[in-house]
Amino acid sequence: MTKKIAIIVEHNAGELKPIIYELLSMAQKIMTLEECKITLFIIGEGIDKLSQSISIETGHDIYAVHTPGFLKYNGSLYKEIFSKLFTKKKFDYICAPHSTSGMDYAPALSVALQSVCISSVEDVLVEDGKIYFFRSMFGEKLSAKFVNGPNPLVMTIQPGSFKPFFPKKEKTGKAKTGAITRMVYKCNENTMVFTGSKVSPCKSSELDKADVIVSGGRGIGEAQNYKYIEMLAKLFPRSATGASRPICDYGWVKYSKQVGITGTFVSPKLYIACGISGSNQHVEGIKNSKFIVAINSDRQAPVFQIADVCIVEDAIEFIRLFVKKFKKEKLITQGLEKAAIKASARMKN
Amino acid sequence: MKILVCVKHVMESESKIRINDSRKWVEYSSSTRFEMNKFDTYAIEEALLIKERFADSRIHAISIGPDHARDTLRRALGMGADEGIHIKDKNIGFRPPLLTASWIAAYAKNKGYNLILTGIMSDDEMNAQTGPMIAQILSIPCCTATIYEKISPDKKMVSVEREIEGGARDGFDIKLPCVLTIQTGINCPRYPALSKVLRAKKKELEVIDSNSFDEIKQGLTLKSIRSPKKKMKGIFLEGTREDKMDQLMDILGKQALFQ
Image (cartoon, rainbow over all chains, first blue to last red; front, side, top):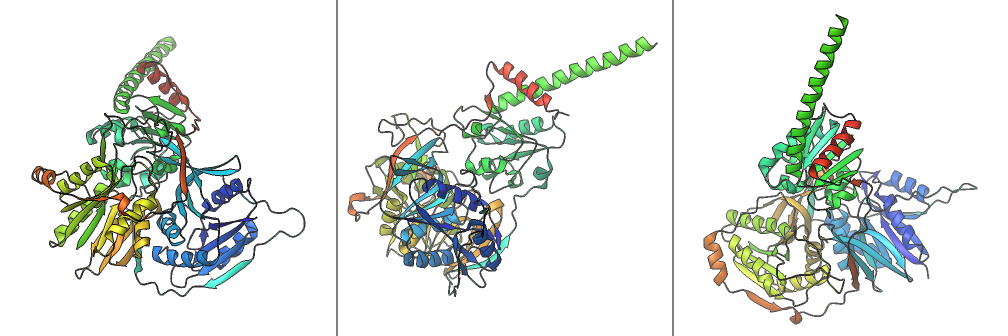
């Protein structure tokens, strides 16, 4: 029997969020075991153009729920609409991104549908005719394997876990286009009323512009050790210092230093992570760096999975000595250069 | 304001992790140390800050777990919570969030709480599901990742900001009662005060056996846990610290990024 997969399409005021391609990729993995039909769902205002383009691009049917006056994500509204929709139309899998909105509505939706919820799914495997779902626990130091019973499954997909899947356009004949079901939802929602957005107090143009970023995390031990992070950064031109979320929460550094999903996404030529364990929140924010060096005393730290160069050492002790050594060698090189200039000058004479 | 704060008793987040023989949970030994889930400390603190604004507030802390989960309740009392409720569950290991949420919701039902607070997620299972599930079971609104809250003087509404991608914030006015899951950085959790710690030691906790709740059908099974598959792309520098410094100097030197 054909299984049914619902994929929730997230967007920013009508602009598609690319996580959809990771959700499609995850669906492909499920489809290696069982035949599935994918249906897309989208909620919002001004979504006609997007619904059309995505139905052409993917070839999947799409339900577009128009919510006049509701431009932004509203938890109560989404839960109300999805609960109604998915009670009427049954799906075996309901897949959402593990975004700040996905993690908000998915668990509640699973309760409303008397189904099961797995959050931040990172992998799907088919073994012995069964589908297993993997997600991280204990600070990403463990991976847990889950299997679901007969109930429908609501899941959120951890961004960056699945290789994006772009549906191939059919080469011959007419490309298949999904059918669009357009509905308008009249909202009486008044338990939760949107009052406006604020820009992030965490954004930093310094981090955006830097070629080299040196960041500190909990492993630096205490606030005053952040000076070593600054000293290391000063060895590089066009550099900046950053931080993981916890040390911003502790008040060791300002939130404008925060690198990660809830701070600044960075893409420097070189990123040096010092005493940072490497939570998803942080790793997602640094993965576009060209070259990553990680220094951490714990060999198990997940940050080493994304680093190009891994150094298992106490971060502060290592940096302190490294800076000292660097300055000493620079003096020697400068001395040698001076001596060479003098020598060549003498030769000319 | 009558506030319920859900706090979880978890293994210290810096602990060394060993998988137990059943391969379904981590091994706890006599030297394993536990603490209040650090995300929940922000929820307790926020409740205390509300009590400073509304002096007639009562703060109840609730936790599920074996006997030693009471340490976390005592910590909450030491910080300033008024009462502690222990849902005693002998089972050690993975507890599906739906079960946790159902028990807490069953306890909270018809008790007149204006507000239910909890941390955005737990240190160990990292599901971020319990808060929104409690709200759904009780049919009340929920705001996750709350980074600001202000309760209206008539206590009928709360203005919140929730943190979204990139650290931006969306504001909402929400009718009370509701559930808020608290994002880190909203406040600075206080240390327990000595006088309160002494009081907390003597304070009687309300104890409820988890068997007293209706059985919940739970379709999800944890098959096993393992160390994550290493997706290593880089190299480990080996040797003495001195060797590692030389190697790093070389690698970075080749990229010509130094001053």
